[in-house]
Length: 295
Image (cartoon, rainbow, N blue to C red; front, side, top):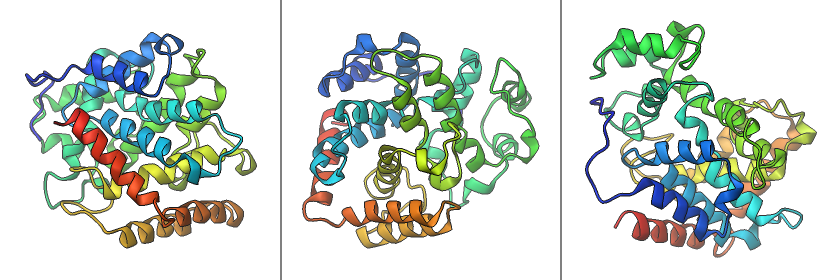
């Protein structure tokens, strides 16, 4: 993919759209730290940004709230988690602006569909060296520097392992910017959405893992599989059916190293995806976000 740090000229207003997304769910922007919002705006400044997916996830959770069975959960808290869960894709807390730009480029969705090659197992530097990135040596420096991404053992790091690091950075960022809308529970839920991949930045014991985190994880994976136009986590260049998506999710659960009790909890969540009206609500949410932000 061609490296383009500059934004494309368009009518898109990232700051306005980020602010509107929070307003749509009646979330007080003044209750979220300015540096966190700045990172969301950086992410949303990218073409076909990951923040579109966060908006869509929040909308899906909102529409399907009656199915979730989270009676003791603060709905607004859950929506805040959905909107913030990928803030780490702008890089770690202490990364320089230049390093954050490189991070956003490496997370760009187009990398998942640019060729028939499965990039997940490709080494990060091998990918950069064969891409149109203008200065691979500078990229190496940014990836390893303390004021960059501070990555050790870079030569052994695969793209999928790099992509999974965003949950660590989400935890790092949010835990240092607690605010009225972002309390410690929001931090834990938002950063614990890749437990099935073995990512547990909050170092939770299994009996401490919130059900909200499980819902966020399964919802994200299903949404990625079935509804996002260009980004397919499991299959490139083609959408999957509902049945295939369910099978992928169940396979992820079976392959995880979680306990039988926790895996059963995930299975019960996946089972809800086949309830009457659930997927219709997903599709309606997708169409609403597409109409509002991609028209």
